[in-house]
Image 1 (tube, helix red, strand yellow):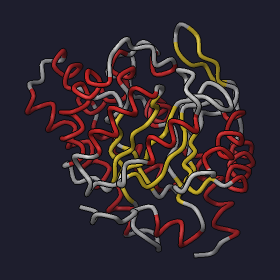
Image 2 (spheres, helix red, strand yellow; image 1 turned 135 degrees about the vertical axis):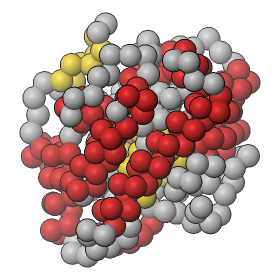
Image 3 (tube, one colour; image 1 turned 90 degrees about the vertical axis):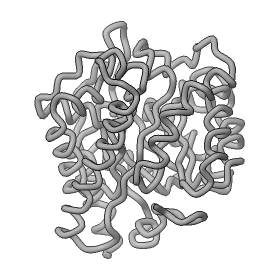
Image 4 (spheres, helix red, strand yellow; image 1 turned 180 degrees about the vertical axis):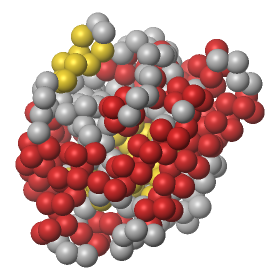
Length: 315
């Protein structure tokens, strides 16, 4: 367990000026043969092919990522109950996801110098449970109290799972971050990052000013970084500039360039790792301290960026 007040991302930032996240988990899982045609999405692999989950983490670590996010983004008690898992079995599956990432991190720690990799437990939004794209609108029709109750049990499991920190990610609305900050207060010993899904250069998906959402997230003492993910990269520089006005390190992991979302989900135009590297170096110059990729990004993207960073700042 990470001691209260510490930042597990700090050693990487101190070592080469930045902490490098992994890329699109589901994107790479699908490329390895994982079947994502399910409301559980990538969490389905925890049940059917855990060896692929571990391989995704290994591939991103070998590409140069410092941090792995677990396959729990859409793992909820409600969805897992639909697959016949009782509460204890569902909690065990979530904890197993952290174990798979930890196993990969331990293997990589023997292969490369520097600080050992860390594992973030992914806490996805309510919209991820709905599996209807509402994490890109925040239009849930629920109150803060209702969202707090929805997140509470899973939050408790992940906060006590042995992870190094929580990745509270793709949060589209001010109401949902208010609920999650309430739950963070129950676990002051567990560091967390908060990242929002944004629909433009200045606002969350529900229209809330990004700066307002960051202020709410920053009010929790255990939040060690704040920013955005699952957002079009064209908006990244503007969002980073807003986030750098706060006191926390800025986290940035947008989607791949050229993505469009339709009724059937995201489609991705081809992009090169060189394009991602150029963009990511620009995000670093703009002030981001924690950088990775979200939907549509790959180990090749992370490898290109990690190589560029580390060639400029030797360990």
